[in-house]
View 1: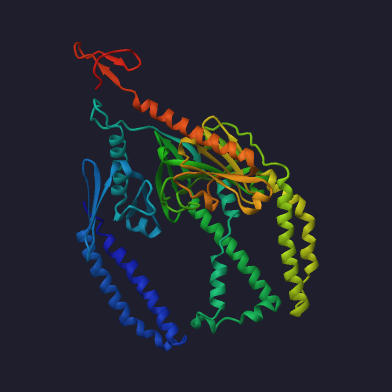
View 2: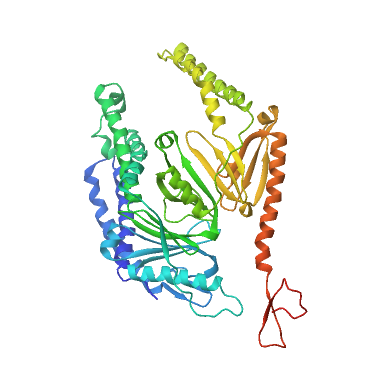
Length: 515
């Protein structure tokens, strides 16, 4: 099977435009912003377009993909040939994405993610929307068929599974997602331009000193902040427009996006943990975000990191917990908090930080001649007890019947739920400062996170004895959970070779041979 012929001019346009933009900046920088030097780009543009078109024709002719009994094969490459065989069992997600121009041209990109992969395993760019949907459904169907392939099972195709809607974003929720977003890229671009690295535009802009020392300049800076917020609003709204989460059998499927439309799936067997996120503003109005963490790469953007996907961008907190229990049924947690004396530790750390900032501000005021209100920095000590209490209050862990739940953070609070059988390692860490307070931190590492970086589930700052008990208890529960999951797989049927196919469960004593 081949790509869509429309992919040739589209991919050629992508490559040629990138080359032209790079050439423009190189020529502009080399001529010091002299517009007279720009016509040099014209022959470069013609050459880039011809080169891109020729390459994409060859790429189109040499790109092939096909279904086999056990794998999905992709063959590509112009200069060097590459052949990939992707087993159906390892396919984790099949995502479809289409931006505005692609929708106008009638093409779509298909991305294949595999379990444990750190990037896209297979990419088909581009096919028609109908072919993309066919590839997605066919790959999912073959994956289910291979996973259910057991001796004696009929080789007929599995019946279609009914799709149930779990969440659909409302206009109010979409507006909240936008209102709580801020994109700093515009500020970064303004700083880059003002730094003098852009000679062609620098001559039309006022100097940075003039901006900072005038009312007009302060208004410009304030306007940049407002524009960055509006940019964040626009990106968030277009990113999560039409967000919809459904469940189909053992898969969670999602659709989202206005300018760039994504659709994909999250296999339930690949879910490592789930996270409920909020902040003071969200908690005040009773809202939260749900994030699902999977093993490997999180496709389609919209994630919070390696292996993370935003399952629900924002909803009422009670609704978030209902949806979280749809993914992993952990019940209602009752968190066990760290010992009360850790509040004194937090207060001590905050006080040290404020003391350092005060000393720096005093030095600038005293020796560099700048008027810095260092006493105002020192006045922050008034808020230290409240800050230490809030840090302590929003920490905790809970051992459920099948899950470990941890809670950490005030400004960005995360409540993580990890099934015991998903824990890969239980790590006990004690820094030199924690040892002085006789406390420790216990991390529950999974396949989708690196807990020592702070992204995994962690019970932070507990008594040494409590930490020792928790580490041993988690290890025991992990082994018990793994044993429970192995037991159903070890059950098999016994066949009476002397009778007409009568079957017996292994729990019934029998001397007959196992199949």
